[in-house]
Image (cartoon, rainbow, N blue to C red; front, top):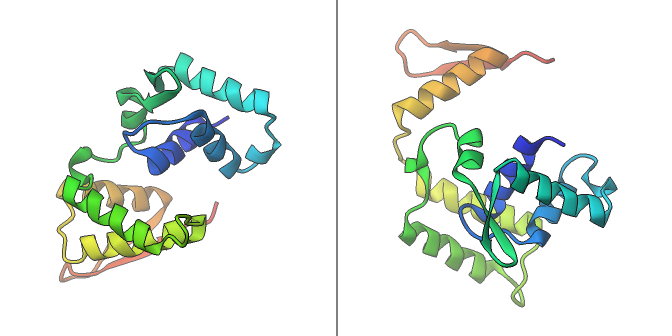
Length: 159
């Protein structure tokens, strides 16, 4: 199993919050071939993440991602995290969209995406992150900048 993909999904789902066994199971089953795992295999993956130092026991029944796990998927520092006020605003937006207290996966993604688009409108992306993104595109295809430096042209090489 690819721990990086699983850790990324856990980060997306839980961030630095508590991770229940059901969160681990949901993230595994979201991966290609993940639905083929038996309940015993799902539990063994959680134990493997603990043994690898990727999950740390936070409570009797929950874990949290370790600093090592977060560092393994980070492209920059935590300066891109939501502020406490932004987290509250996102939570409020999710609550308003929940019908009868429930929100399906597609709506969760849509509400979160719209919220992040609004939050990031006009935001300056840190140079370090932008440089990392440029290098990532260059490693996977071609990225060229216009003569005036105001526009990038991107093409991705197919594997």
